[in-house]
Image (tube, rainbow, N blue to C red; front, side, top):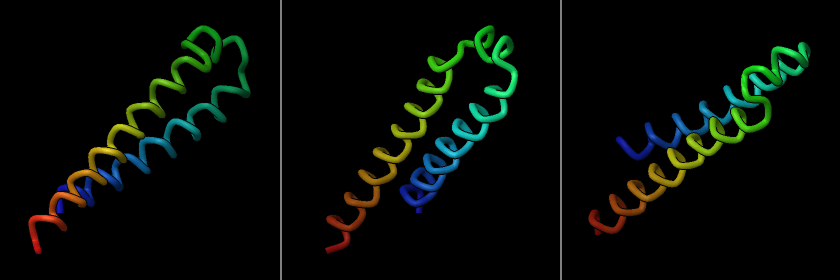
Length: 66
């Protein structure tokens, strides 16, 4: 259950990073002042870590369930 939650949280984090980037891209000066593409990359990277961690927990649960 925890693996599924982490996996879904990762998907949501990546979606939020993309949505935030699109919103800030409308105002280039604000986007650049807030870290620009680096901020988006770090946010997406955190989401990917949740995806990997959640996938790992799911795999461990499946292996231990056998």
